[in-house]
Image (cartoon, rainbow, N blue to C red; front, side, top):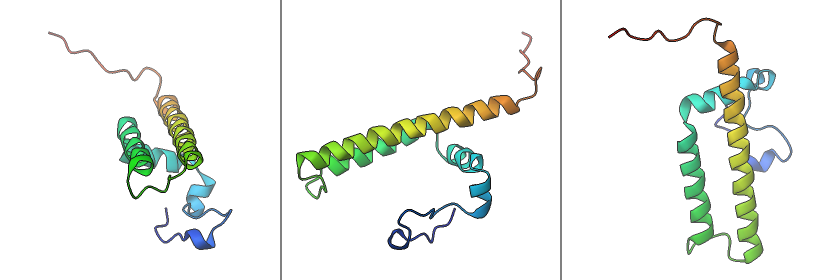
Length: 106
C-alpha cells in the first residue's frame, strides 16, 4: 500500500491500493490480518472511537456528530469482521484435504 496517499487529491478515488492489490484484493485482507489479530483491531477501533467521543478535544461536540461517529465505528467493525471471515475462509480453502495436525502419542 502506498504511504504517500493524499486525502486532498483523492475524493472518490483509490488512494492506498497499488496495481497488484487492485487486481487481487485478497492480498490486502491477508496482509492486514497477518499484521493484526481481530482482538487487536477491535481494541484499536474502540480506543479511537472512545477518544473521538469523550476527549475534551473531541470533534464530536454535537449529539448528531457523536451518533455519526458511533455509526461509523459499528460499520467499520462489521467490515473488519467480514474481512476476517473472508481471510479465514480463504485460508481454510487453501489447506490441502487430509493435512490435519497429528496428535502426539503419550
